[in-house]
Amino acid sequence: MLLITGATGHSGEWFIKMLVSEKYDKRIRCTIRETSNTSYLDNSGLDIELVIGNLKDPVFANRALDQITTVVNFTGLKCVKNLVNSDNVKYVDWVISIHSTAIYSKYKALAKEYKEIENYLVESGKRYTIVRPTMIYGSNKDRNISKLISYLNKFRFFPVFGKGTNLLQPIYAKDVAGSVYAILQNRESVANKSYNIAGKYPMTYNELLKTVARGLQRNVTLIHVPYNISYLVVKFLNVIINNVPISTEQIMRMNEDKAYDYKEAINDFGFSPISFDEGITLEILEYEKNEKGINHHNSFWSSK
Image (cartoon, rainbow, N blue to C red; front, side, top):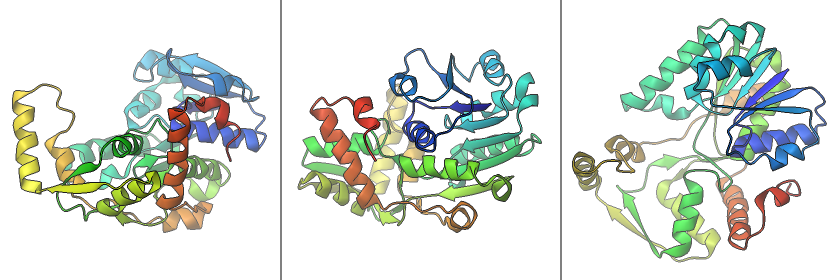
């Protein structure tokens, strides 16, 4: 049986849609939360068993793995240890897990945690395939570009910490899901390997902002705040205020290049991502539909 975690997330939704289009006929178990919208899962026509809980709970993680042979983990790194430590992991033959290119960051706090979790999976003795996407976008569920679209649609200026010349290579959620599906079809060639996946081309942060603004047909002025000033202000705010939505490490990472080579993914499972120009056009279209009150899950099955 196949276990899918994060099936109600943006990449998970696309993965489910691909299983539908390919007429997947085997039993599937999906972990969800009580608040999850499962309407598209209920209407997918797939043989899906829904189990409610949080994979950070070891007891639930163990129950979710009962009789599971293949795990597709879209939830991220935080649940990996609980899955690998579960008694029922004995049934599991293969773990395909979505991780992050943040493992390459030169700022140690985040990278160290990601490396430790990846090593935990690698050393578990289970067959694994690790997929490291860059920043994922492509629906109103993403935590970065969707917020950027909303902001730039309302305001005519945008603060940029630093020069904005650092490279980014965001990946469309459908391409993440497509990678996982292709990996499932190429079991032997991808066994015990790790892959970087990214958008078609890298671009500077300034270029990304201008591309989004152009897609919205908005004239936006970029206000560049010197990096040193940005860092000191955020550091001060974190001292005097609780729950500041940005950390000094995030400020430092904003000036870090995040462009990655994905040749291995091309060679091993035919990875072929779309460009940011193509992807942002699709996300803006979804944003405009949502603004007009068109139900996302009704339109989800009709989209290509």
